[in-house]
Length: 208
Image 1 (cartoon, rainbow, N blue to C red):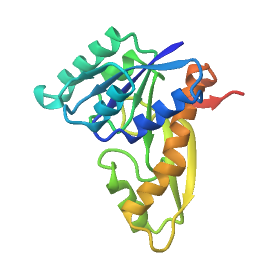
Image 2 (image 1 turned 135 degrees about the vertical axis):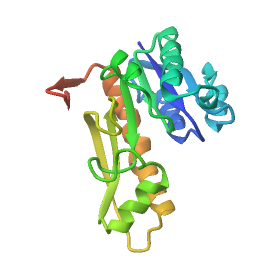
Image 3 (image 1 turned 90 degrees about the vertical axis):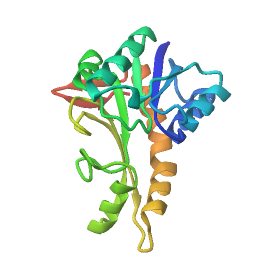
Image 4 (image 1 turned 60 degrees about the vertical axis):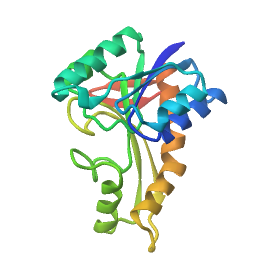
């Protein structure tokens, strides 16, 4: 059974999807053992508490820079004996000291089809605003491993939704979360926990 540590900053809807998937048996050979928040007021902490999941609060504002903050996160991950780290709406880019310590063991969900609308500055509604501004006909989400560059790690899973003529960023965001993020993130976590993801030449391949 692998220890899953989830990093959060906000409402925790993706965390809830993971909790529901674990409770329903979708996630196999893995258990959420800790939730770490960069924000002491994050509602995600309440979601963890409601499901008896231990939590830690490591406020970003208490550290002078991202390197010092990343070192604190790394110490916590080591103490929690993390086998898999999931970034679920975690709003801080981690320094390479974390990604190098946990290569191909950190998973993130990005609300677009990488390599489109990704990288530094593309987060939250900004992603969907950019997609609609470009006039794309489909969008979606990407589950990928995290490395030292923003949204540049090996892609594990992707899913798409149609973009409709009257979509707003908020409507598109909701459709992608409900139809892609909340389904594929737990699936990717389960695949990892079952050792069904193989890395070849920095690309991720899912094995049956």
